[in-house]
Image 1 (cartoon, rainbow, N blue to C red):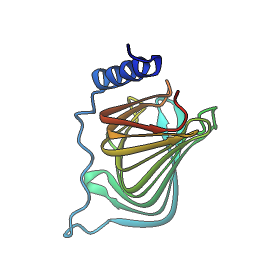
Image 2 (image 1 turned 135 degrees about the vertical axis):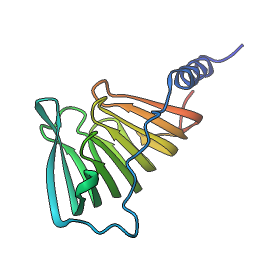
Image 3 (image 1 turned 180 degrees about the horizontal axis):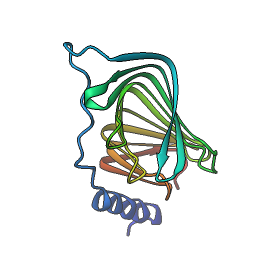
Image 4 (image 1 turned 60 degrees about the horizontal axis):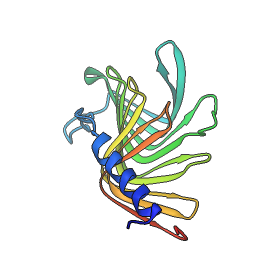
Amino acid sequence: MLSRFRVVLLLMLAFALSACATSQERPPSPPSEEETPDLILKDVEFVEYQGPKPGYVVLAAEASLIEDEDRLFLKEVRIREIKPTQKGLYVRGDRGWYDLKEGRLFLEGSVVIKTRNRGVLETQSLLYLSRQDELVGEEEVLIKGEGTTIRGIGFVYEIKKGRLKVCQKVELIGQDFI
């Protein structure tokens, strides 16, 4: 007979694998070596709107505008909520590309998502889809929180719902499960 913990764990894994579909959208492409930025700005701060309401503040140590393609190349990127909610969402990455037309932001390097009460997610890249209000990633992910660590590949974080799904090869590492 399976222990109660194993049944719960199997149900969680089955749900995560069946309900997880990473986005088919591709991240905006980085500038090529031949492209010369039309404008370079230092210590940039701009607001990402969600419809008519301001949603998040995007900060970058440097932003290079490639005007004819409506995208920004960003270095040392940080994202935070304008009005901190209970989630207390904070995201950072080494560099990124922001598609001004589509409202998509791609981050890579050492990418970290922090929430006030739910822990920390670490990965190498993510795509922020502002229209869906989702953060998605396809690479290895490590989630740390209150004595438990979850490792897997790929994730979808539905920001408004506070729902995180790890997509593949989910491994739960923790203490005192029984």
